[in-house]
Length: 116
Length: 114
Image 1 (cartoon, rainbow over the protein chains, first blue to last red):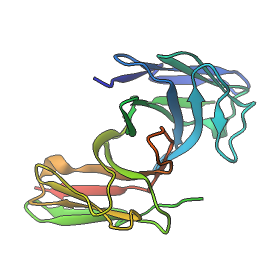
Image 2 (image 1 turned 90 degrees about the vertical axis):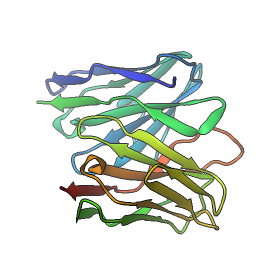
Image 3 (image 1 turned 135 degrees about the horizontal axis):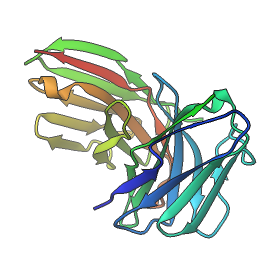
């Protein structure tokens, strides 16, 4: 149980274009999902909290108009990187937790974004 | 901003040796998790500690949460090459059972040489 998937696993896009990344909880429902970013040789940094049916909560320094989050159902959250630039190239990882175990987060396999 | 200082950042030891990784903070966390991450993959949860002073064992891995819930340690006994990887500690801020985003330490790159 507690399997989280992401799609795509990697994507290359041109500067100025937008890219959508999907995060799905496969065998459970998640009212809350989280989006993290990890640059090479660095640790994970929380970007935002995705709440089903309501607006996402962004961490300080993360532009909400650039990183659009939509949590339309209890099993799907999407992150859209708008007008991507090379500095947005990173490893984007989502996570979700079981309602019965709010302290335990299960992570997706990540999406490698490269902006050329 | 809550920070987690993880040490050492890099550790290379011989198979069979013991090691300890530390995770320290000046802030109190409601819970603390340890993850292992392979290159190009998402972190995999190893353990969650919630109660101050709690000790959990997972085969040759022993995890401890400090009494004040500000620090934690991971001890590996008789390390094996299969233990090689990136180990991350992460703390949750919110108490009361609500889901919360995690603050991660910088990680410990562990290499076990055969």
